[in-house]
Every structure is written in C-alpha cells, then in structure tokens.
Amino acid sequence: MAKYEKSIIGEFEEVVRRLQDDIENSGMSVNLVEESNYTSVDTKIAVRVYDKYFMRNGNRASLSLTVVGHGNNIFISAIGAGGGQGVIFNFSLGAEDELVAIVEESIENM
Image (tube, rainbow, N blue to C red; front, side):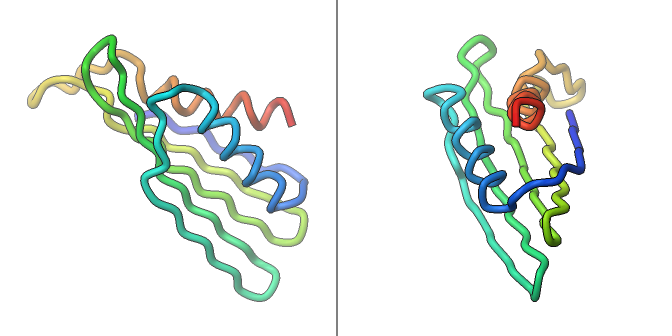
C-alpha cells in the first residue's frame, strides 16, 4: 500500500478537476470506478476510486482519492492498494506507488 497526503490552498472544484484529468490521462487502462460528492455548509468532500490494469505483472491496482475543502483550505489523500501478487506473501511490483505518484506529481505541479 502507498499513501500520499497534502494540505494546500486553492479552489476546490479546480483541484478536483485537475486531479481527475491528470489521473485519467495517465494511461489507457485507468478507469474511474465510482465517485461520491458531499457538501455541508462550506465544507466539500469528493471521493474517487480508480483502478488500473498493469500488463507487466497481469494485475490491477486501485487508487482511492479523497479531497476535502473548507473555504480555500484543501486536504488531499491518495491511497494506492492492490498491485501485489500471491495469497500469503503480498509481493508488490510498485503498481500502487505508481498510481499515488500521479496524484503527488499533479499536486506539486499546481
């Protein structure tokens, strides 16, 4: 499992849109599995779950993305999972790290 978290200042809808675009444009086999959006007064939450097929090791990895905005304060959490092989030994070839790195690069380039 891989994780990246960051707090930034920005406009919530723009951050979510930019992250979605960067993730979806990172490869043909990236799919948005499901999304959820919630607003309460001045707090907004966007949750996205993606998966990607990795041909090099023949498996899938998932990326769970949560973006929380309160005013212009934004918290981003990206968690990559899966991408391992085996039942007893969860040997990973870095697929979940690769997915989380897409989010980290997108945020660092904003």
